[in-house]
Amino acid sequence: MLNLDEILRYLRATDEETLSELWARADTVRRECVGDAVHLRGLIEISNFCQANCAYCGIRAGNPLPVRYRMEISEILQQVKLAEKLGYGTVVLQAGESPGRLPAAWVTELLCAIREISSQAVTLSLGERPEKDYAAWRDAGANRYLLRFETGNAELFAKIHPGHPGLETRLLALKMLRSLGYELGSGIMIGIPGESWEDLAADILRFHSLNLDMIGVGPFLPHAQTPLGKQFIEKMVASQVPNDEMTTLKVIALTRLVRPYANIPSTTALATINMSGGYELGLSRGANIIMPNVTPAKYRELYEIYPAKTRTADAAEIFDQNLKKRILALGRKIGTGAGNSVNFSCYTDSKSDAR
View (tube, rainbow, N blue to C red):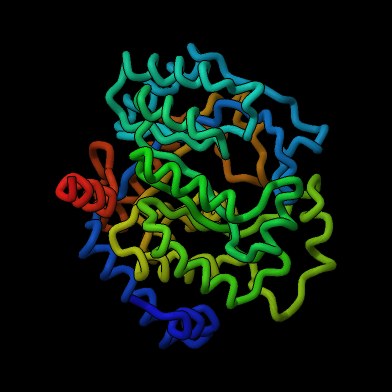
């Protein structure tokens, strides 16, 4: 297990010898702990309604520009079938935080409908909700929940989440999800204006203390229609963490060393800043997951949480074929099944033993 000083040393490293050492360590741990399979998870962006005003997000409530939508259940089921046809063992249902537009009962109805047609694992990413909602969705067939904490610096968290009760509320939600039996996912943004190297190193260690099964990390990408995006250029200072590809790759590698058995995606945000090789670089630095977007094209353009979000004009089937070729060209293989976290299996087994 790395300590804070070791993490900081790698984060600040610029010499090729240290970086090569980090890449090799991360790739070796990835191979030994989760293998060569790359699991593909079909992402469906079911709604862009959001009541939150996160300072970095393009679908924030205060942005009047997006055309708002909520997919019909029948439309979502079509995309679930497409993901299953493409061999994806998991679907990820993502939306803005909007209990009014996504009532708990509607989500429960959707989950029950998915369970009637598919045995795929279902991951939810719907923001913070009351415990009773989480419990109902778990009972209806949801397997995993993604809820990023973005930064463990409480002051910075408050700045980028105006109106939110605070970081501790987010961390309590993660503990609540764990107690309900979800496979637990979270993560951070890298290079938020005001973030220090010490903040970032502490967040990487926090992945371990939270016992996360899935960890998504990606660069802060400024959106012109957000307060943080507008301030970004003026506020950048030399002492803060850069929101670049190299730092993102370092964090992926360090995350693998801190959470050897976790599922770690090579994210869309990384692919956005390097469209020709971002996925591959992430996979070679410790990642083992990619989440292809199977949202219908007419909605995909409207779910712009950050600008220039990587997307393709190709049909999902064509993108899928190209992506799988790229994965195989790395000497990796395409994962089958749900791709459950080894860490989660060990955790639940130990809980059962304790009972």
